[in-house]
Amino acid sequence: MAMPDIQITPLSMHDAPSAYTIMESVQPGTWSQATFLDALTPPNLAWQLCIEKRCIGLCIVQTLMTPQFKEWTLEEIAIHPEYQSQGYGHAMLEYMLKQAQELAVDEIFLEVRETNLPAQSLYTRHGFTQIDRRKGYYPSLPINGLVTSTREDALIMRWASSQ
Image (cartoon, rainbow, N blue to C red):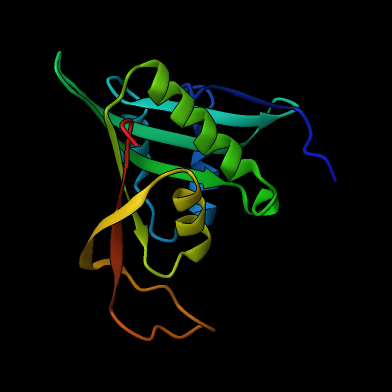
C-alpha cells in the first residue's frame, strides 16, 4: 500500500495540542505540557507531519549554533501509534536530516531506550552510530503489566555531516 501524500510543516503553538497528544500516546511519563510548549520556541526547531491536514507525527530539535559549529539534539520524534511502522518515522527523520544539511549542521545527537529496537534501526539506517550509554537513564516500562526493573539505559547516538 502506498503512503498517502504527507506534508511536513513547522509545528506552531496552534498545532501543539494535537502534537502533544501524540507524544503522550507514545512516551509514557512524557514531558509536561509546559515543557513541551517551551520546546517549540526558538532557537529550537519543530515540525509536524500531516496527512490531509491532520497531525500524525512530530519532530523537535534543540539547536546550538555558533559561527564555527552547529549542533542539534533530536529531543523528540514521535508518530501516532496508528501510523507507526508504515514509513512515517523514516519520512520525518529524512526531512530533519535534509534541514540539517541545508543549514550546515555539523552533528546531531539523540538518546534512545536500549529496548527501542525499531527506533535504533531507523537511526542506524540514517547514519547515526552509538557513541555511549547512559546507565539507568529512563524509567522502566511495564512488560505485561509488570515493571521488571527500576531504570533502563539510554543509548547515545550521533550523526555527523562528515560521514
